[in-house]
Image 1 (cartoon, one colour):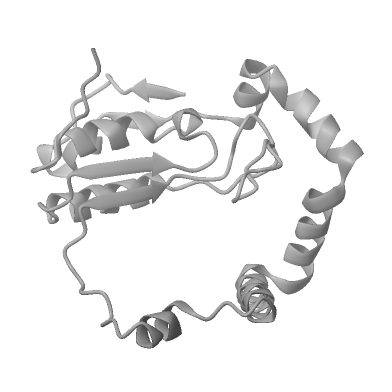
Image 2 (cartoon, rainbow, N blue to C red; image 1 turned 120 degrees about the vertical axis):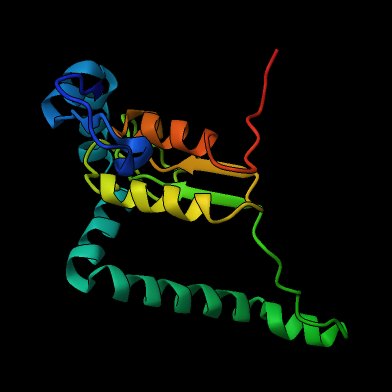
Length: 185
């Protein structure tokens, strides 16, 4: 939940996040979302990928698990005879792609979600507590201000609308130079 602070005005130097404070507790999320208890029960009953991935994460740590996953994927592709991207470019006589200024900024605000879908590639769920800090949101808005070629901001991560910084992030992004807001009828 996001609350607008009204007790006193903050200096303009605080930027677009001035006046906003995050008010979001686990108890409030649990109470507000009726699917969470059901989802947690299903995760416990089903086990499967959730349990295996959680165990590997605890045993290996996030960085090591990511490296191991990349190696597993590369071995799987090699076993199918699928070459790497760079090798494929060389085989086809193509140059490496040219770098250009980014036109899209993708922001993952966290992994908390009121559901635990088996197809979720980041395994968001009611049990995930990783979230972006308000300081990181402020840094993203500074980067966005300095990136006039960015025309689209893609906010993702669990259920981003449940994150306390969602509203100031959207409002700040809409005020950025060069950004165009999609309009719907």
